Amino acid sequence: MAIMITDECINCGACEPECPNTAIYEGGIEWTWAGGTKLKEVTLPDGTVIDANEKQTPVSDEFYYIVTEKCTECTGFHEEPQCAAVCPVDCCVDDPDHRESEEELMAKKIFMHGE
Image 1 (cartoon, rainbow, N blue to C red):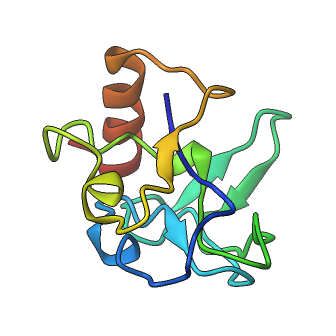
Image 2 (cartoon, rainbow, N blue to C red):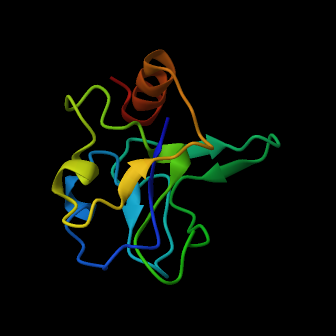
């Protein structure tokens, strides 16, 4: 499953630099698929192909957020999600709406990093 940041976030930013996929962004900041990855273009679920550097709408305007599609729970990088390990208020938690197996998380990591 992916990790999510709850509304208990205090906007300290400790989690952001820990993410190997650059899946964590400050509230209100647009995100890109390319950030922290080797992606040049991405095919969306509807079949649309976009430039990986194209800015995407922020998931939250109020607090730090994790882009579910980029979160691998640090699979292939670390033994545990680093955002959760460093969060001082324990607001980086499992996202019950986005369950993925270890194999799916590793496939996502390979897709983004080519490794």
